[in-house]
Image (cartoon, rainbow, N blue to C red):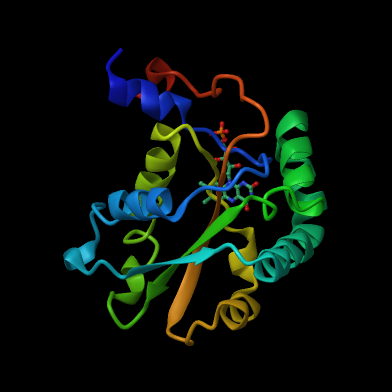
Length: 190
Ligand SMILES: Cc1cc2nc3c(=O)[nH]c(=O)nc-3n(C[C@H](O)[C@H](O)[C@H](O)COP(=O)(O)O)c2cc1C
């Protein structure tokens, strides 16, 4: 297996982190890789809000917990038991927001067609996850806090034309994760 294929398979959703810091040069390199993603009309509508400040991370953690409290019972039946337990711990107990760095990805609606907001942001998010994984860091794509749009904007001092689309915790994994479970190619290929 080549390095890229191995990296893609290693990338998993980490929801608990050691307290060790991640330096700014590393975060800048990860964001640089994110910016090489495709976007509609090469609009590059993203901004990456790097949140280290404890008060703001706690605020984001509170938004996650509030949104999860509403979704929790609906999600329980839809997730495997172990995934539910992991997500529940990450959102209810705040282990996701306790990562040393949260990167909130937001889209500037002035820069992109309304129909292409998500499709022009998530390729960059995926690059970001892979760039973190390549450096031995844990990360996760989370969106639940973005349902609290105006509260999140207010917390981050973002103007109303910025739509937060993802909150990505980054840090050293608290523990290694087992290999990802995925439907195999022979099942998904048509
Ligand atoms: C659109 C999207 C939204 C997600 N939102 C959350 C979230 O709010 N909280 C969370 O803990 N995980 C979230 N996840 C992570 C998924 O649970 C995770 O990608 C999936 O379970 C596969 O995990 P694995 O790569 O570790 O196997 C989200 C993933 C996607 C693609």
